[in-house]
Length: 512
Ligand code: SF4
Image (tube, rainbow, N blue to C red; front, side):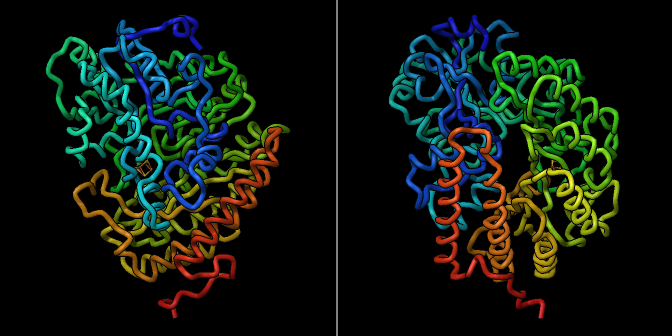
């Protein structure tokens, strides 16, 4: 951690995030999925211990912080602000000197696809992500600071949700919500906040205000789990996604190396490389650039012992089997048996692919989608790449036939070592004016799909868990605890849906 930062005891701008975001998820970014669950049969303290234990702190300053917050910290430091990232449970120790507080949000009301689906399926209430965001704003020390004039600015990937709850924004006296890539606007907003000027209630960052590569600062202090960005934007244009509206930019190796050095300098021995499609690093097309991807991984491996990806695509994996093999040879070693990523499958229906995500298949054609998914699954299995995949149901264009096709695909993927997470459609991107899909609208076919995903995940979660914490002294204890958690979910699902989760897949009624 930056020594100057450690010595600071006050700053005019504080930055923080709620408890669910200020965690390293036991050194595994993908366990962060657990924060999207609603409070359930597992006691809260125990759930937090399993999925989002607090990050290590020194005098209330977190040793690692969410990457997005680190970017804002770097931008404000570059502009000459006195700024500190503070753990949410230690805000009271720093608020007296502060004029403004920036809060980073990912899914502040649990409206993101994962949390809204999770809470509807489990039929319980407010997801942890939402509960802890609300609790942060309700902290007595924060309420007191607001009374004396502290300004609150909220931003991050989940900022869009606050537009849907203007009353919450008013009730909690949030002064400004920034929606979009904030580097070029955050300085003027915090300056206005400190000087007591008029702040816009909502500030939507336009495409013109998106920072160029040179305008994106490098992080100054360590990010959670060594996450580093390698690029922004996506060229695939899926209609249900908001990333598409941003220009595609790939970081130069030098920029990536600077951030690796920051994390490694703080003792972090692993990295999550983040982009919407890591395999397309440096490419101007939908074909992976072998040399660039290889060099990227060699660079990272010069610094860290283990590596994983945030996202890639089925199409890129299927288009570059040799490259995946080369990357696996660089990543897999005695210390790391497999690596993870997130991938969108979304549907097993070619018709639906044509309607909402034709470019997700490129360089292949929409009619090749099922082959692309199955080929990519085989390549990943062969190379120890274990993904968390998403499916979307409830898209306005989805027909019963589309759902049947997706169920059939689930059958084809039953031997695919992966988690496959069903998500309900959430109106975002080009579809932001469409209606939300709710649990009440779930028909029998969609229920069958949810159950098949649950069966798949319970089976593979048990397998994956065996290798999860191998290196840690507490691995056996944690394995037992996670196993218990999976058992509880299994029982709960059986009780709610009256289905034998562990039995062989049933035939779909509608297919007969
Ligand atoms: S491929 Fe992923 S990031 Fe890109 S537009 Fe589609 S859903 Fe969004």
